[in-house]
Amino acid sequence: MRRARPESIGLSYLNALEYCPRRFYYEFVQGDMLVNEFVLEGTLLHQRADQPGQSAKGEGHIEINHLYLYSEKLGVSGFADVVVEQADKLFPIEYKHGRQGKWLNDNIQLCAQALCLEERQPELAPIEFGYIFYWGSRRRVQVDFTPELRAKTLQSIERAFETAALEVPPPPLEGKLAGRCRDCSLEPMCLPAEVKLLKTATKVMEGVK
Ligand code: SF4
Image (cartoon, rainbow, N blue to C red; front, side, top):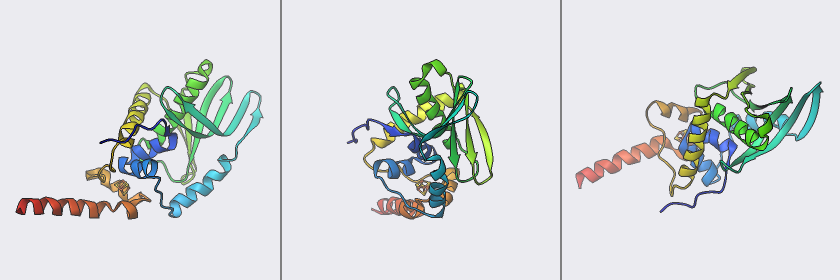
C-alpha cells in the first residue's frame, strides 16, 4: 500500500528531504514540527524578508520580497525570500539563520526556486546563480546553478514525491549521516537511538525464536 502522490511539494520541504528523508516525512506528510530555540530564531529572522513587497534599489534593480513561485512541470511551489531583477537578469536570495552547512540542502532549495522562475519567465532564463545569506556567519554565499546542481535538484524533487507516497516514515539516518540528528529539532519526536535499539532487539528476539 502506498499513499496517493501529492499534487505539489513545497520548496522548503526539499531542504528537509535533503537533510533527512525521515524529517521530510514528519514535516510534509504528517505536518509535525517542534519549535526549539533554533527554529524560533529562524522564524524571527525570516520576518523581515517575509514582508511581501517590491522596492526599486536603483536603475534597473528591483527587489521583490516573499515572492510566491511554482512550477506546473515539476509540481513544486513555495516562497522565495527575495527575488532580484537586475539588468534583465533574475536571481533568488534565501536567508538562513545558521551557518553554511556541509550539505547541499540549502543549495537545492535555492536551485528549485530558480527552476520555478525560469518556467514562469523563460525570457529571463537561464538563471545562472543565486545567493544564500547566513545570519550565523553574516556571510553571503553565491550558489551557481550548474548542470550538476540542477540534476540533483530534479532528483530531489522526484525523491520527495516517492517519499511522500510511503505509508510509514523512512528509518532514521544511519552511519555518518546520523551526525545530523544532533542538530535536528525533531530528534525528541523521532527518537532515532531508541528506534535503532528496538530494531536490534526485535532482530535478536526473532533469532531466539
Ligand atoms: S533526528 Fe535524525 S533521523 Fe530523526 S528526523 Fe532528525 S535527522 Fe532525521
